Length: 356
Ligand code: GLY
Image (cartoon, rainbow, N blue to C red):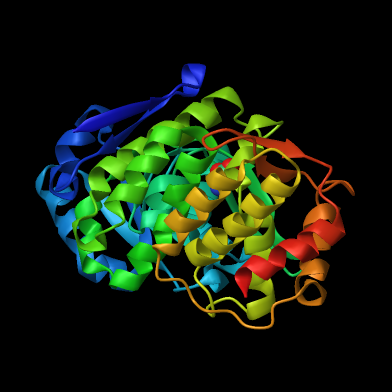
């Protein structure tokens, strides 16, 4: 088992990555079990796939455990669902000693993490991510929250889990396109932090059927944990994790959620950000081509007629949330990201030609 420590002083925690780990959770959690109430927070389909097995294993090993399910999709990240889960926790006799297991992708992790942050002023929780995106990104770093009518993630907390338990074998039960789309986020880690990793990924992607997910996930977790350890509250460095996301998020919002996968949107956003980095004189032409070739090994959706008029309103919303300044993530060479406020609207518009 590969174990990576997220170093945050008294709030440090391990990320364990191992195929088959899901069958070993009672043992992994044994040091944390003091006879308290445990709650799996998940979705019913995930309970059927993995959750009921996990629940039974934990019960057989003496854990006092129940489960609560959330609806599938972004609608779970609502005040109503949040308050329903909190009430159910009370009905299940959870108290301040209770612990939560967040079994799911980004939505489950965000809601369950926020429940953990707020129930009785904060209880322990563990992330058990079930998507590639959650395994390499959202389950690590403590970002939790829900949406309100005025915007996404406007209510939340940075509240670190006690551990992240990653079983790459879970990916075999997901649709192949869902998994490969998540590779956009894996490429991101190579591009922003480690040129050699990016080269490895490029080689592995020549045959997606033999892609070594366990190694790639472990390395991505290592990079994310290093960044989060250095800048937990996103004062500066952590922003580089948003490489490809400014244009990626705008594409998701313009096309409508469900029309493009997050990892695909990020992959396309990285192509634009690579172009912008080159135009700013930060990334050599051959480095930009290397990045684009790697991204193009993903089966990406073909987009037509995307132009600045479609995307700029969403990019400006991003800008609003940064007090009027767009902090755009660019590459200063492959494997080295930084942010700049020098990216003009014209350059963003020009970069969109790489999408057509
Ligand atoms: N998903 C980016 C971050 O955790 O900061």
